[in-house]
Length: 614
Ligand code: CA
Image (tube, rainbow, N blue to C red; front, side):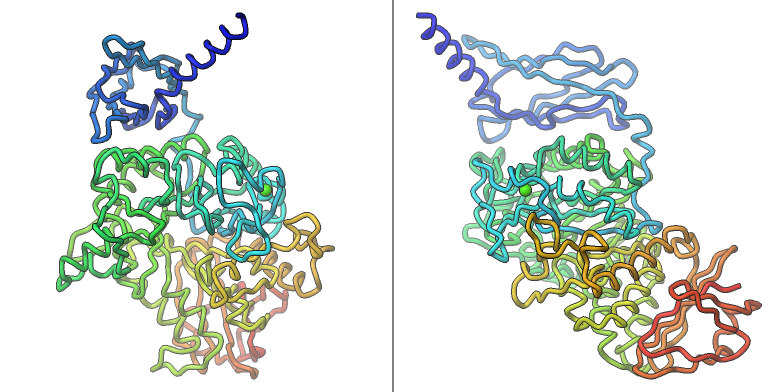
């Protein structure tokens, strides 16, 4: 009898418990600037229940029903004067039914949370893919609840890398001289195939268990901060994954953009500002799906958009992150994006957000930066944009020679930087030679170390926030034409039994050490140079593929020289007199060699010099 009674109790309480299966966000904070809070409550047939809460300082403004009977959207207002941190309950009542209880907590914010400093041009960002960096926990390579199982033999399979793998190698990243880590998305991707890339999110509030738990992610951020490293979280507002938890029970028909037949975006971002664009093209660009497996979210649905904005703030506050990178930025409704960026920067005025602005001319990219001047009077509120123009220049310029009237060779770099008048803030431009979607730089340079040094010298000394892609610092290569997986190979030494461990100097090959030592020297030098972070820039028209520019502030002056020739080039210093002024000697940061600025000197072939002028 006893056993049956116990079994009955377990079943009964499970049934009751199962009626509410989700409350997002699961907890919140007191002391936020925005006093409003929206709760999404999901549970079978809960739509007709009366919701009540009795807690000092909380006003239940409205309970909104959705199209699906299994949702309630509860609008709350928290009185900043009276509400205190604590635990309490929401009660969901329906006649002749037992009450449903939602246990809730309002927490105190961490001290100084609102004043947190986001990443900036003083940082160097290390971009890595968690699945491909290091496997710190083999026990989580596969989990029962998610279908895509680990298989390192497949380029697009999951390889088992995880958050613990990053934590285990924070010292490696710190010694390299990077100061911020951008991980491609860590949130759950319940997805049968190629889920490792992370961009088909199935739960915006849950770290993928194959990477670790939410708690593991928070601990990773804390461990990074303890070493002086910032963390940038990669989020996706444009689309979710086809197996997102809500796809089987959409709250509203227009929670996502629905089409009679699969309709893919036309990728034509210009349509949203093109005064000649057809409405149909604009609609397909914005509302078409990114992939068959990635439903297009509707940022114009106010419940979804509040849900998403709160989700971003929840991750900032909960995990203590230092920045957000937002995927496929122009594919979202632009007014909603401005609302998102403003909501976050109102709450955290010194935070930084960067949007993926993969566009093909500088005016299109500049359009997306906060306070940009444009005839549409649009203000995106987004602090930082990505410089795909310079990325494109870097991917070709070292393999060609060009004259001043051509966009070739060093003139590509000169031309891309000469567009800076378009940008509202030139320090908040993310500059990079490659990322997880482009050809790897070392593949394009065919393993030429001299060219690599020139490319990285440029990245680390031009304006903006440099980003480097994991593995390039040891000469890693990969060919996108063989599949995305090839530019996302495993970092050597990240897996038990790897024949090479490139995380340590003794484990690296001589060539890998050559790359790493160069990068470490360059990045660690940059760390302490405000003149590079925020100084002004003057550059000179490349002369026979020798590009010269200066970074300067009131205190310091740096002269950078890139000679993309296979021969020595004589630098005629008279040309640079307006920048050199009274300086007489330049010391090369990379070699320590000094150069007399009173007389012309020879720059060796395929060489980058960074001269600190005195
Ligand atoms: Ca693992």
